[in-house]
Image 1 (tube, one colour):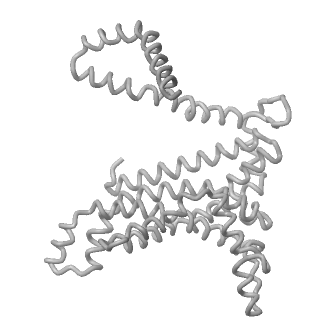
Image 2 (cartoon, rainbow, N blue to C red; image 1 turned 135 degrees about the horizontal axis):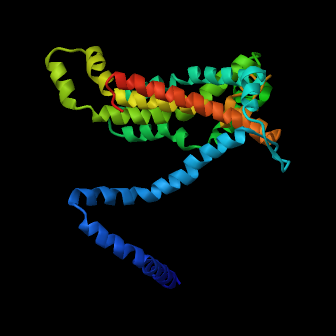
Length: 326
């Protein structure tokens, strides 16, 4: 049965060649008449053309479509789409206090989760040692990063749940202490979500820094030791400069990821209590798919896209000025 299937696949591919042969043959003759440098350029272009077409269809086109939808009043349960211009944006920026709160909360999450980068650096420094079995520890630290965010949220919801249902509060009750309302009090819920994000994603930062550390030549450290440099001086003058590119990459990526926090909030707090953990993405989800105001929710997405674009361009310009390239 496998042989028959493979035979059919081969026949199908040969059939495709026959179909495209009238196109391929003239292209081959045209390609052979070009200078060698032009041949290389055309060949490279033809290799990236399929990806470019797919990227335009599935990325560029949806961006323009999103902006188009944001200019309309469209309730998903209805069939009428009415053009209203920039009214969605005017309402968002001037009158929607819930959106303002979600935006401020998202900025707070960005500030709270940026330390993930430095925690990842610490773990990378600890695990960048030629010790037997070190690969096992690297795997353990990275493992949470490959677990689905829904699973992560459920695990830590069980740990931090209020009263005796949560593992921490159940332990405290054994000593007549607590309970602590981890997920029922605004500030605590924010810190719990930030901690969960750190535990979930720190492995990725560690892996990037670990790759950067192993890319630094050992000869630099040996030369520094000969010159009498202690560990702090080696770290300051060799390790930190050698990790500037990974650090720049992680800064941009972490800001974008923090703006897109959703799964943890949805599973652990549902945006509560009293909207204290409501982020922009959660607000977009709620507006579009619970209240069915697709046009208004899309306007929120456009604003978030614009903010992330400005922040990313600013970071790229800043790092470029510091000699980190394009």
